[in-house]
Amino acid sequence: MPRWRGIAPPRNARPRSDDRLTTRRLLLTALAALPGCTLSETPLARPLTLAPLPPNSPLRLLGGLEIDRAALGFGGISALHLAPDMTLTLVSDLARFAELRLTLDDGLRPTGLTALRRGALGDGAGLPLQRGYAGDAESLARLPDGTWLVGFERWHRIRRYRDLAGPGAPMTAPPGLEAAPYNAGLEALAVLADGRWLALTEALAAPEHPGATWGWIGGPAGWQPLAWRAGPAMAPVDGAPLPDGGVLVLERASSFVGGFRARLTRLPGSALRAGQVLEGNEIQSLSDPLPVENWEGVTVLEYAGRLLVALVSDDNESSWQRSLFLLLELRA
Image (cartoon, rainbow, N blue to C red; front, side, top):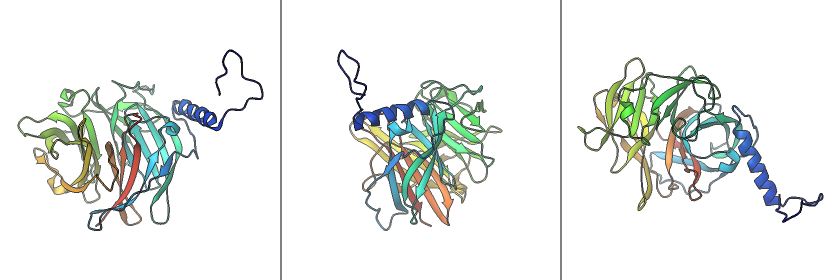
């Protein structure tokens, strides 16, 4: 509403269009804070105008969207999952989650997002986690039975959710994960095609392997260590399983001088063995003509005979960053 100095607003005063928009966004934000809140058919994104990738790239760009942080109710998106019915699930390092409907045109180009459900991630009793130490969700994976796995940093751990709006049961974390730096823990978590889990830390250094960070493979029944050596000054920030048993790993670097850099790397399933120092083969630099942003999440989906790769960026709730979604196709 307009601000009226010293007196109440006249009864017939109508809010300006921008005030109505602000009021609407504040209402959406408040509603999104409710556990399991459902707000269907709410537009959340606008298409981006993007130039195509070079013809010889292993990836073909299908399109992208800019997510409206105010309409969504939160920023800080750190991981995503895309289901065959085009349900896009997001988690935020602010202890939030959202389930959205992704719409595609006949060419599989993304045209929009609408909200299905969103709310707070819960603790073991289902009570909302507080942002910060307890709620810094950084990674997301899904088991074949539909169970969600969420990796957290600061308080380094993995929680299992039957429903993201319900309680999160603690899982047996990889041994040594507690030694990860406060804000650089379990950034990548993937359930591989053979059922093993792959967990990679952002910056838990492996001193005997210069330039590498610690990770693990296996799962709660038997974690085994391995190491990941990212590109120069980079670190792994997410991973997505491939149908052939391999994995895509998203690597990122950031600095005050150079800004953000990121790349997608690929590793075959035959290389995913305990006790090894793993290095992915770069398949795409996330640079011009792609938007340069704080890319932090990757997911893969087999759909209509094609292999789709989706990426999301973390805006850090900053006015100079954006929450972007890209959809690409991995060529055979």
